[in-house]
Image (cartoon, rainbow, N blue to C red):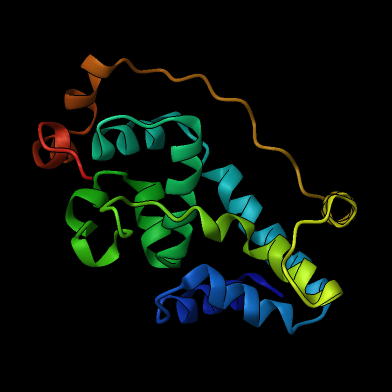
Length: 182
């Protein structure tokens, strides 16, 4: 699976109410190598989006943002498709224009926790016929990704304080600073 095929699959998944579940089912029917390629693309995008400035934007949107919430936010961002992902990566202020109730989760947040496990769930589904957690399969999955060259995300240091956010992202602050999502 190349980059174009990855984004095409993400784009198609947006048409389904349960995006992560749909991805798991579709990927689960593919060859293991394709599932691993999907996960490699997904994790590379997650790693590339692990940035202090993007975390600041997510913090404004949600009125705070834990480590886990930032992961779910980045999963959501990838799930919005290539164009949105690139625009936000180029300028997080784009979120001020983009966010609306149609692209948020049931609780009103820009988060998609379940998309984070679609690759592994598909791998498990393909090998066992279900998505029950399996420690041995997870280790196998990680080893296969490692052999494909998956690099861990670089550590980041948040280079902002809460009082800096209005100046950093004035459009986001004007829309969400005093009235965050959720």
